[in-house]
Length: 119
Length: 445
Image 1 (cartoon, chains in turn brown, blue):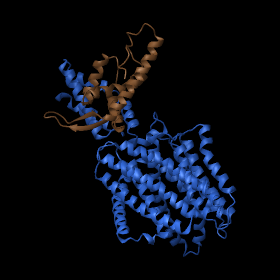
Image 2 (cartoon, each protein chain N blue to C red):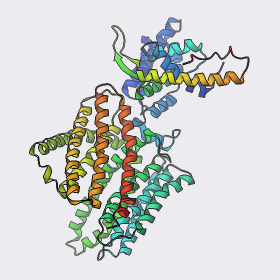
Image 3 (cartoon, rainbow over the protein chains, first blue to last red):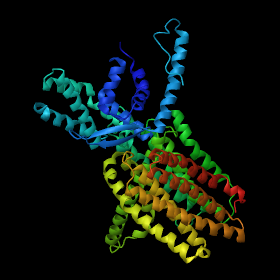
Image 4 (cartoon, helix red, strand yellow):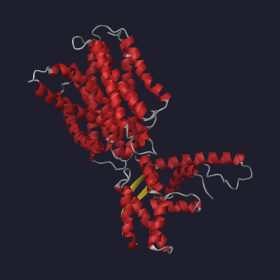
């Protein structure tokens, strides 16, 4: 299935925030998680993730930290802040409202569009 | 992975050549690429195949770097302003700038002829001075940003309104309020230029920061042009004076035309020769912020210890106001030139010292000003100075609080930037108040 570009862009922020809500992570791991979660339906250019992460950093939703593991290269970790959590909750509310509305006009497709976690 | 190391290095160089992508970003992207290659390797692909797939997945470098540019407009803002798609500045830019610069120069000379210079110096000339020049700068940006007719009308409104108002007001002879208007109108109109400069919007936080950056760089270029002009004039005088040419009389006409034209030329230089200043401006701020911070801290201590608060007379107060304005401008500009991703460093502490010292000085100035007003009553000058100091005080308090919160890790730089960019509107409003409200309040005296 091909998902519209705008929809991919719109879902990117909540998706990344939600992944980071599970614990700190770095770019490649986040992207792998996105692929796994969407079963490959969400097509991102890998490179696009980083400007997005930097934007989240600027807005104060995540903090960053360079860490050198015992072996291998230095890597930049992203950690969700309290503000990021608040932003995620806000995104969840918005998406819940959107899915509710879509469920309303697409009767019978309730299973296709399970409501997101109501908050 | 050894066999593709040269390719990886090549790719890295290519990515790093994009102007909005810095070294850390490239490290991060390279780490990603290597991860991807390793995983594809593990899945059975040969090195070179894995490399090709990984690069393909990374996305084409142009669009990725454009995305970086959109996020890091501070690294690349000149390319965002024209249009996001076409990064190269318009090649015909200089002709356009020249036309507007010459127009400004011509208008100023015509105005001087009408005013009867040099024998006569009517006050309407000083009052309207910025209106002779700045509309051309606004028009230059309106054209450069290719804005629609509606934006032209909106951008023209503040110029038309202020021209209308300040020439209808019935000024007294030797009016203080008229001088205040002459001082504040340029500020108001400069803020009016923000609208065309920002591409027909005023809301964007990032573009407001761009405008601050533009203002700082414009100032640097203007000073450079003025210096060059000064050297030229001096040498011209030295050469033609002995030949019996009355250089002073010629200079009296050349100088204003040059000064007016340079306003547009400096803006054009900022727009098209961005890179030069980009290297210079952060260095200048790095150099002068500590010096100003030191000077301010010394001044704060001296004035607090020596208790010379009563010695604040009119002249000293205006010097202090000028100093405080310079500090606020410097702090604002340093912030606009700062990379928002680095964590707090010593420069931020020095800025905090500057802000807090300025705050202390401002409080002392305010105290003595209120005392003066208590003794001598309100005059246009004192009211304006009081208002300016209150406006500055609120700005400095906000900046100090947010800086401390940022430096102690309890807030983000973004908050601090937001505070400053939102506050620009207050500065503009205050200047507009002095132009529009203060004169009638004091009966145009």
